[in-house]
Amino acid sequence: MRALTFAVRNRKEILRDPMTLLFGMVLPLLMLWLFSMMAENMPFDLFTLEKLAPAIIVFSFSFITLFTGMLIGRDKSSSFLMRIFASPMAATDYLVGYALPLLPIAFLQITACYGTALLLGMPFTIDAIPAVGVLLIISLLYIGFGLFFGTFFTDRQVGAMFAIFVNITTWLSGTWFELDMIGGTFQRVAYLLPFAHAVDASRAIFAGDYGAVFIPMLWVMAYTAVIFGIAVWGFKKRMRG
Amino acid sequence: MEIVIKELTKTFKGRIAVDHLSLTIGQGEFFALLGENGAGKTTTIKLLSCLMKPTGGDAVMLGDSIVENPQAVKKKLNISPQETAVARNLSVKENLEFIAKIYGSDKREAEKKANRLMNKFGLADRAKSKGRTLSGGLERRLSIAMAMISEPEIIFLDEPTVGLDVRARLDLWQILLDLKGQITIILTTHYLEEVEALADRIGIMHKGRLHALGTLDELKEQTGQAKLQDIFLQLTAEAKIQ
Ligand SMILES: Nc1ncnc2c1ncn2[C@@H]1O[C@H](COP(=O)(O)OP(=O)(O)O)[C@@H](O)[C@H]1O
Ligand SMILES: [Mg+2]
Image 1 (spheres, rainbow over the protein chains, first blue to last red):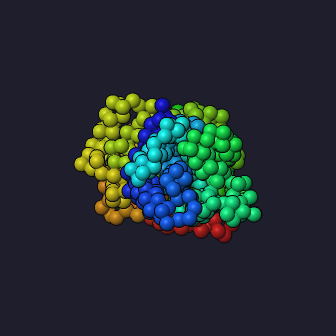
Image 2: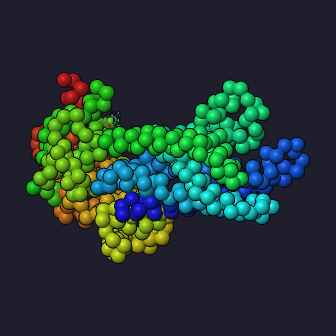
Image 3: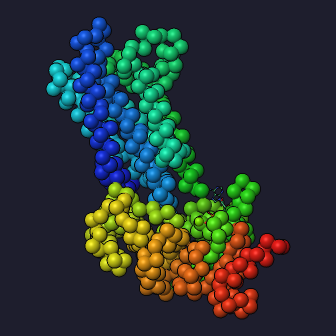
């Protein structure tokens, strides 16, 4: 109950920030549109809507990391967190309260991106339904990174960390170019991180290639568990002063 | 039932922030902790409100120990932190209702309490204004109202008038004087006038240690000084010679 009350506050805090709409929605949709226009003049199929839309949805989740991290960072610097730490709320209430409101935001991002892709000419498939489920699980990875940044950094530092994070998540994920085109160490490093796996899983599920979803999702979920674990540990440590 | 602080100590990586603090604060008392920046006032508040575990010592807050039973202590108190700690994108009313709810009120009760406190703190005409649009004085009033909404028996006010202009400060003093006697108030400040205007009793803190304790008259008698400023300088200067 307390966790829900806190979640409602966090939802309002995020949705009432104009940056949420701008970066979380407008920017990914704009990129989807621009890159899909380029597809016609490209010799390879990377920017066809079938490949582009699943990757852009994952890209839009990067901003979930930013929203979560900024919210927690601000709550620390304004001592808002201190005020609620003084209340009889438990550590899990806080983390559930911070994580929960981001799921409907992820859902909105998925539907807005997919809806736009349909309008741009991507053929509708029934695979989009399980895809929503897989993407929501992927969004937990990005929520986890947000909790992690917010717990360990101040709001100013979160901004700087995010600039690095968004570069890693896009360049090392195969969204803008094929990773095996570069190959070598670059590709190996990319596949040691979860972001390329997240994009692969998203593309596979939209393509109906269910067999290719499982292994990448194992990577994603393992990373999610570890990141959440570290964030919870750091948060509890902070709560005890 | 009172607040009994015994040898309360906190060190950060070997540096001592609160040094064997011992004192008793009576129920319903308005107690002011006076000290320069870095004296250890905020750390003391964090220890007493169970936001931090002490390195040593204990405090019994109206019957419950902060070391042994922090959850019971937490239910009795609330806090207005040094930074105002107001949610930026929530309205005044939403901020108040939110705190009421996390302390266990249902929707109707939370709204009733919020309305009552907005009237009491002169915030009713700004009920719908977002936290980030409030002036310093209003933000501070909201911060204190948020602490009052859980109906605590003890309230901590950490430097409540820092950064306020004269009028906002006087308005806030009036609000605090109206609260006086109803609940136990522990206020920290480095403004001498504030202590003189508000407090029943004063503790002067310097480098983590309590250097003096008493009513203003008692301190005057102890030091032979007529002005609080001179009392403060004398008590904290002696410490440097020692
Ligand atoms: N979390 C912390 N880690 C390390 N040192 C701290 C921490 N909090 C406070 N201090 C130190 O403890 C001393 C007292 O600080 P504080 O209680 O904030 O003083 P005041 O509120 O009286 O200005 C200062 O020297 C400060 O630097
Ligand atoms: Mg302080």
